[in-house]
Image 1 (spheres, rainbow, N blue to C red):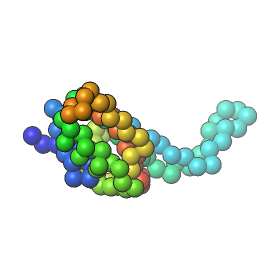
Image 2 (cartoon, one colour; image 1 turned 180 degrees about the vertical axis):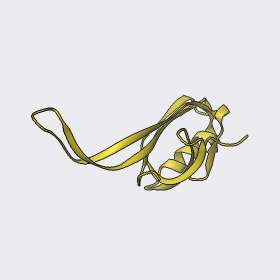
Image 3 (tube, rainbow, N blue to C red; image 1 turned 90 degrees about the vertical axis):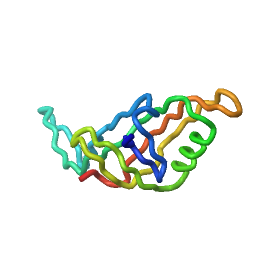
Image 4 (cartoon, rainbow, N blue to C red; image 1 turned 90 degrees about the horizontal axis):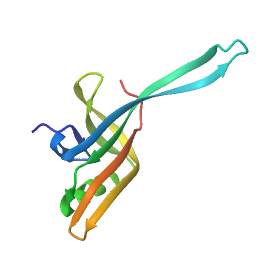
Length: 120
């Protein structure tokens, strides 16, 4: 099955995901509102940040995914919901959470990925 997302070499298909969202975050500079309520600002760029939650994972799957995001920056190939294509960009993990069910079985893994550069 074609992966929805590949994080630093670790691929996740739709069957492994419980949730997948792409948040197209706009970053502005010099944003002000005048007395008439009119906004003036310069758009720096739109950054496709990604939130995902997996299904319950086996030990090896959870460790591979945690290892993939426990780095400064890494490559992510993701399904872009606006263009219906795969795109590749550099990301970092803002936060990630691993649920432990027992010593050999993990629950869901939740990851927040932040784009290093604006989308193209």
